[in-house]
Every structure is written in structure tokens, then in C-alpha cells.
Amino acid sequence: MSTGIRQRSAAVAVDGAPSPLSRESGHLGRSLHVKAPAGVRRDGLRVVVVGGGISGLLTSIRCVLAGHRVVLLERGPVPHPGATSFDQHRALRALVVGDRAATRRAAELHRRWRELDALLCDHLPGAGLYWRVGVLQALPPGLIPAAVATASAAGVPLRIVHPSAYPLIGFPRGSGAVFEPHAGTLLADRVLHAAARWLRHHPDAELRPGREAVAVDPDQAKVHLADGTTVPGDVVLVAAGPWTAALVDRPVALHRQTMVYLRPPAALAHAWAATPTAGGLGADGRAWLLPSVAGTLLKVSTDAVRREVTTLSGPDDDAGWAARVLAAGVVSDVDGYDVVRVKHCHYATAEGGDTGFVRVGPAAWARPASGPDGFRTAPQAADAVVAELAGEALVPSIRKDLR
Ligand SMILES: Cc1cc2nc3c(=O)[nH]c(=O)nc-3n(C[C@H](O)[C@H](O)[C@H](O)COP(=O)(O)OP(=O)(O)OC[C@H]3O[C@@H](n4cnc5c(N)ncnc54)[C@H](O)[C@@H]3O)c2cc1C
Image: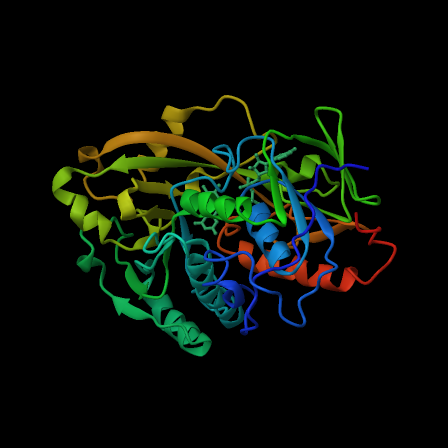
């Protein structure tokens, strides 16, 4: 039966160094046909991935690097400007005040994203997807010792700074601040483009844009499409962002948040390009900003405009929500800035807070609730599910005959 799925190439590029992605970084961009060393599986699964946001793209890359073949189905183009992940930037920080384990886990993401940066930009030297401009966190002065203790116990560098050093930013009255230098901003939409390009050039991956999944059979590993066709696999991974819950039976809460994109006055452009990502801002300490690094616009929002919704579409009061963001006091003298764009964006959360892939059937996993940190944590979610597949590959009931 012809499935339209390309056959695996006999050779993959892996050189045997320690971590899953660093092993290949520095090789795949230059050559996709390095002889596979001993230990690399040649009997990989055929994995059907639904969704081409950060979760779907990075999981596809990890699958390919693990020796599987991937077909990625995306209802729009790849990447899709309508994806949650498709934005100028996403913050990458480690410090969770009072939670050493979470801080340690998050700190590991710096290394993983540097590896990904090297892997995805291997053929585009200097492109740089991860801008380590640091992350500034405004805190009540009483919490600063706890922040320092958490960072120190987790091995995360942290400096106490004074808000007066950042005159462009609005801090809560009487606030202190800490600065995490090994943190920063991921250029999210550029990451998606680079990941899609990487997959497009890999013989074991096939991107299929314009394919909308309408149902998933988690027992038989089949995806039914809106055009009436069915795509079979050995395993299905559903990574359709906040739309995942429409395809798998997992209850989630949907959150909508409004972001405002500003162009700083020309005289301040240089200063903003060197300003860190920052949180805990504004009069009530709930606002945050991503600076205008690498030619992006300054982006501001506040958790005060995050609301639970029941639908991902429908009209909204752009002007009203934008006015609330601008009134939060995140930027000093905001009237001097041009409002270039207002955008609403969604993420899903699940009870219990699980943000990884969960098993939804014998032959299917889904990431239904990637949450408010789902971009930066996508590499860990991808690693975890691909590690699970490594065990499943040996189970005959899951693995059909390789076609
Ligand atoms: C305002 C805001 C700020 C955020 N800030 C941060 C941050 O600073 N740091 C951070 O780490 N995270 C942040 N997040 C969260 C993060 O953006 C998301 O968790 C993450 O991008 C989700 O990625 P995803 O790939 O799971 O989903 P998506 O990016 O939404 O990708 C899903 C893809 O699936 C496709 N799709 C949907 N349905 C179907 C279907 N039926 N068939 C085929 N394709 C389908 C979609 O078109 C889309 O391309 C933020 C979220 C919001 C809303």
C-alpha cells in the first residue's frame, strides 16, 4: 500500500557524544548522510505528528535523530502564523523563587536551547535563535534573600540589581530586583522556521502542510483528515497546541492573553535592544516585557489580562484589552511609543499542571496542555516522549510491520 511516506535513508548523522541533540549538532547541517555508527537503531517507527508548532517540530526532530521516520501534518503552512508558538519571542528563564528543583530543571533548558541553536543554525552561522540578554525579575525586597538562596542551591548565577538601573521599565513601588544573566529570549518564529527547514532537508522527515486532522484513532495509530483521507503510522503524537483537546479526550482550561507590540521612540531604540527580558513589573507586579532584540518590536503584557475562555476564536475587544495592558505601567512614559500591533494568544493548562506528552491510547500520545512556559520546555517534552517510544518500539502490539 502506498502511504506517500518516504522510505528511511540507510544512513543518519549521529556521532555518539553525550546528549541527544548535541550529538548531532555540528553534523546534520553539513551532511545528512554520515554513516550510522553502531548503536543507532535502523528499525525505527513511523511516527505521525499532528501540529507544526514548537512541540510538533522539536518532537519530529528528536524522533528523526532517534532513528524514526516522521510524517508531520499541519492544517496550515509550516510554520503556521496562527500557531501559539508563532511570535517574535518567548522568554527563557530558570529562577522559580523557593523551588530549587524547578529552578534546576529549568536551568538545564539553557544548555538544551544552546544545543538546538547550534543544530538548527549549523548551516546559517551567526543566525542566533537564543539571545541571552538576561532576565530581570522585580521582587518585593523581602523575597530577595529567598531568590538568592534558590539560585545558589540550584547553581544558577543571579545578581541583585537596583530598579534605578533600568529607567525605561516600570517597577512596582518599593520593589527590588534580581538579574539572571544566563537567560534571555528565544526568537520564536525564527526557531520554527529553522526547525521546519531542518526537517525539510532530512530524508526521514516529511512535512505535509494544509492537512487538517479531524480525528485520531489512538488504538490503531491513524489520523483522519478533513479531506477524507487517513494517514496511518505506528504511533501518533498529537501536538496541536490548545487545539489538541479537540482531537483527544483530555480536559483542559483555555487561557487567552493580550500582548501589545510597541515601537520605542528612535532615541531609545538602542537602549531597548540592550534591555533584558523582565517580569514582575508594572504597578501591581503582574506585567512583563520582551525587549526589542534582533530587530523585533518591544512586547508587553500583564497577567492581569489573562482570562479563561471556552473558545479559541471569536471577536474580542482589542482596543479595550490593549488599553489595560498599556495602563499597567510596564514601560515608563508609554505615550511616546507607537502601538504597532495587538494580538491575543492562547495556551491550555490541565489539572495537576502536567505540561508534557501524556499517553492517550495504546499507540498515541498528546501534549494537550503545554501551558504558559510551553515553548521553552518543548525540548524536555520532546525528549521524554521519544524516550518512551524507545521502549514502545520493542512492543509488537504497537509496532506494525515496517512499510
Ligand atoms: C501570551 C503568551 C505568552 C507566552 N509566553 C511564553 C514564554 O515567554 N515562554 C514560554 O516558554 N512559553 C510561553 N507561552 C506558551 C507557549 O507559547 C506555548 O505553550 C507553546 O508555544 C505551545 O506550542 P505547541 O507547539 O504545543 O502549540 P502551537 O504552537 O499552537 O502549535 C500547534 C499547531 O498545530 C496546528 N493544528 C491545530 N489543530 C490542528 C489540526 N486539527 N490538524 C493539523 N494541525 C493542527 C496549528 O495550526 C499549530 O501550527 C506563552 C503563551 C502565551 C499565550
